[in-house]
Every structure is written in C-alpha cells, then in structure tokens.
Image (cartoon, rainbow, N blue to C red; front, side, top):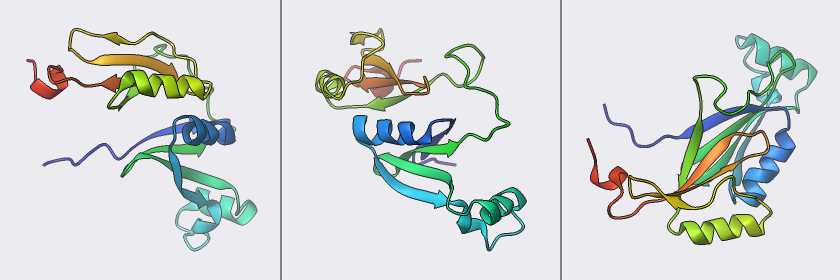
Length: 158
C-alpha cells in the first residue's frame, strides 16, 4: 500500500468562529468546505446527525480549511458532553502538527505581523531542519519547519 499524503488533521473546538478566523486570517488557509446538519436530512440512518438536522439544520457540523492543495485542518464544534481541551503533553496522545515552509524566517515574520506570537525562537535541530513553534487559539501546538538539503527527513537517517 502507498499513501499519497496526510489529507487532514481534525480538531473539536468550543470556539469554532475564532479557530476559523485564526486558520484563515492568520495562517492563510482557505475555508473550502462547510457542512451543515441539513445535509443529513436525507440520511435517517445517521441517527445523531439526522436528529440534529431536524432541530438545528443550519448549524455547522464540520468545516475544512485548506492549508495547501488537498491538505486540510478539519474543525468540528464540540458537543456539550465532550471533556475540555487538555493542556499540551498532558497525556500520551496527540502532540502537534508541522507545516513546511520554503523560508522559515519570512514565514515567522509574516505570522508575527499578523499578531501571532511564537512559542520559541527559530532553531536548527540535529536533523538539520529549522523549526519554530506556535499554537492556535485552543492551544493546539504546531511547528513551522524549513527543510534543508541535509535534513534527515530528506536524506534519511536510521
């Protein structure tokens, strides 16, 4: 089996509008898909979504924000019964996602001009890759990465 790419990463959020604003206006993603519950009115077999479609058809079920062609952040509004967002690295589960850029210094400058404060300075790790860390309004960590010709992600290193 061969994979083409990671298509999306998905988050639940209690602040959908703020997250959409962040990913579109700060990171520059494009909101490409908005699915409302009314899409499930013809799918009674999907019981939970169908019931929500009957009571709140125009509520957003999820949205796709395109960061690069065919690569998305998917956001779902949190439901009242979901537990709160956990602090970063509190549990042995999701940690972060990374976005590659051709020029990390330029990308960092643009993000800072848009009001985003970095969590770290730009550094180069032992893998010969430049990196800088940020977080979104929900605290989800993400890493900007600039690969070099010597980056282990390019050359391999086992």
